[in-house]
Amino acid sequence: MTQQVSGNLHVSNDVLADLAGNAALGCYGVVGMAAACVSDGIANILPANRLRRGVVVAAKEDGVRVDLYVVVEYGTNINAVSQNLIDNVTYTLTEHAQVPVAGVEVHVQGIKVRK
Image 1: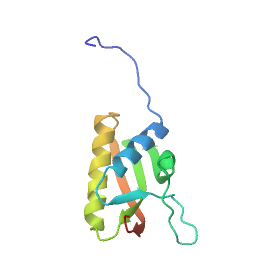
Image 2: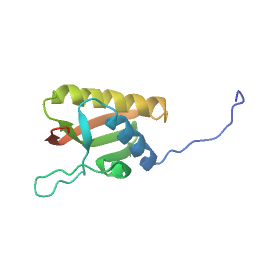
Image 3: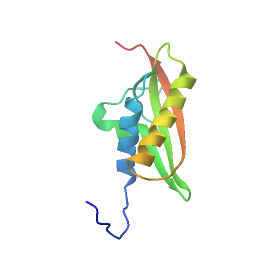
């Protein structure tokens, strides 16, 4: 398609959350996504169809702000995994959804041994 179409494209925060969740799960060292609120100090890994609960997307004037709630693999460098998550989610949202990213924050909710 070489013809340009005029208009505006609006992408919902739920779609952006799905994109960010899938990008996060593809990162080395991430075991799964966790709910934003941890009850009893125990983080439960969310099933793949509920990834959106582990991602909070908020629209700001300068772009979207993404909060990721993850469970990382035991023995991995949390700083390296977090930076990889930030880079991967920023790239995915900028390239695929073409939205400016104001910031990505990673909240490690737990550590688990991968089976």
